[in-house]
Length: 368
Image 1 (cartoon, rainbow, N blue to C red):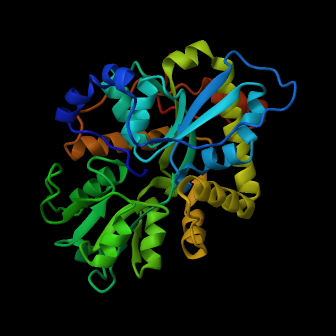
Image 2 (cartoon, rainbow, N blue to C red; image 1 turned 30 degrees about the horizontal axis):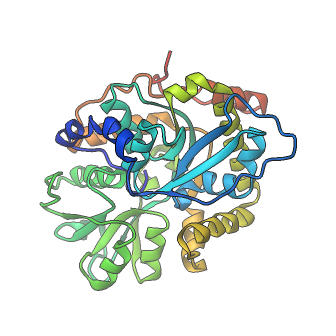
Image 3 (cartoon, helix red, strand yellow; image 1 turned 180 degrees about the vertical axis):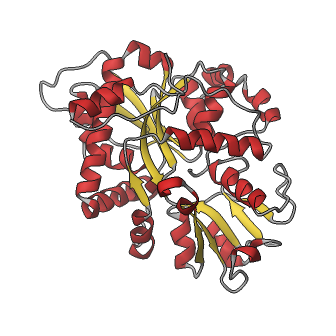
């Protein structure tokens, strides 16, 4: 489950329904940034059916497949003469807005905005075409104030954003403890404080929060500031795996340029292979990309533990996305969604089969 990626309330869904039209006229949000990467195309490389593919992702370790794939030229290699235009985002809504407006074609994104974007468009704007990462989410607390899980009651705990993936997970966990919290205000037996990940470490040091349910590298930043990992979310899931980053595509781009989509997926698979075969080089590559994007690399005491807690894989772990959607329903953030058709894994499975790898499933939520 990933940072700054909201399920919206039903009231917000109605308000957001008109966004694609507005965005076409006025741009797709202030949180998008051209990542400055220039595709290095081999001389004489043949273009695919599109001159360019516009991709989006977050400057986060949970999006390292994209960070490393672009940084090392692994995705560009598969695209031949078709160039990459990359943009980075700090929040899921702005990336979905960009997809809706045609400002990006393919994006790395968390499960919550993927579900939200799919349901609010009545299943017409996107498909999930692959997986990218699992794990990397922790409950980190002030050990002077919280020494056990039961001590969380009555404390102030931050999540990245109202209705985002971690917010949903934390609200669901709270409900499982038998505690009550209003999902809109965050008030109740636990005070859920919605705080941007960039601000959370300072809020923790100032004492305005007692802990946070957050993704990496924010979790490891809090540990470096004296926090303690009280719970790793992976322990709550079967096989300790749950989707935190998917790959999505606009349905129009998938229909018009399947060869380009297949090439990007092949590049993603190749990148995950390289990451898993060369973890130290990949970690350094991701940190270099983060420095170029943010102006500051992560220190070793943050980077090393954060990197270890994320698993990079091609399987979208579809059953866990369905479970996350049900958690949002339980929390009162979403009506029961119809996710039938949200996945189209045909091209991914084609790539995997060509590599002699097992195919991955869509948990019965695949497009016909």
